[in-house]
Length: 339
Image 1: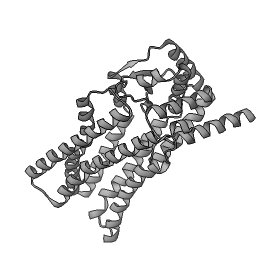
Image 2 (image 1 turned 30 degrees about the vertical axis):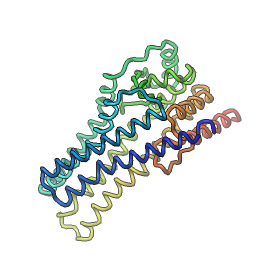
Image 3 (image 1 turned 180 degrees about the vertical axis):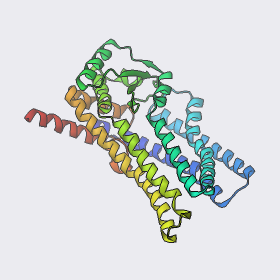
Image 4 (image 1 turned 180 degrees about the horizontal axis):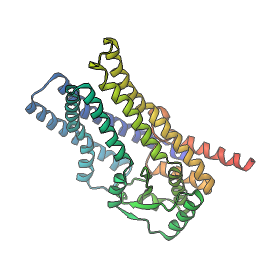
């Protein structure tokens, strides 16, 4: 384990985390204060222009970090543009969000409740649609490796998932070793070509088994429904109580509780649930393939992505640390041998 929990990984993680946190504050706080305290449209446009300039500088620094520590080969303009836009969208979406809140409070209370919940239903339909998977498929290619395709077919038969489509994402220049299962109803698995190239065939099969286990347990669907239910409850608490005859104290408390429900769910509850699902998928996969192959795959992925292997859950990560995952898999293997 110590071979991939080195100082290089820690320095890289600290630098990237710091830059990401600063980028989030630059993206979120200035427009929030501007909207709360009032600002002319022209001044807001100037603010956003300055903000984007700062985000471009931060994205450029991230590129330097990635180049130095991971030796990525991605084009500088593409990296900076993509990273900047991911944060700059906050500046664009926040005014729309504030406008919608103001719009809802101008509606009759009964109409407001019906409208917001109709939007929630539309959101649920989107979550259950195949749109996210369809977009990824357009920028990916079907898996062609005969051995991996054969093994995947056998795994799907053992797990009873039915045939699952596997696609390969071109992330070689970004040097991202990753895989994921996408789709709440129709399941697809996406694997980066950088991962495929750096793992042995047996390790790649173990990774596929892990993703198939997610599909078997319907983890993406469960996550989507859980997040949606939390949003429905919290969202109704945020918009209901101001003018429907509640006691003034309750009218103040309800929106506050709704806000903290969203905050606690996004920071603690949902990441904790996802960590549980990752562990569950690890154990199911280790029953389907050689668990040691899954362990070696996790260790290699950790090293390739320069992720500290003992990263604490208190960083609110959606995956357990590699150290914990390896320990649980080995305990599961040992328990299975004993029984």
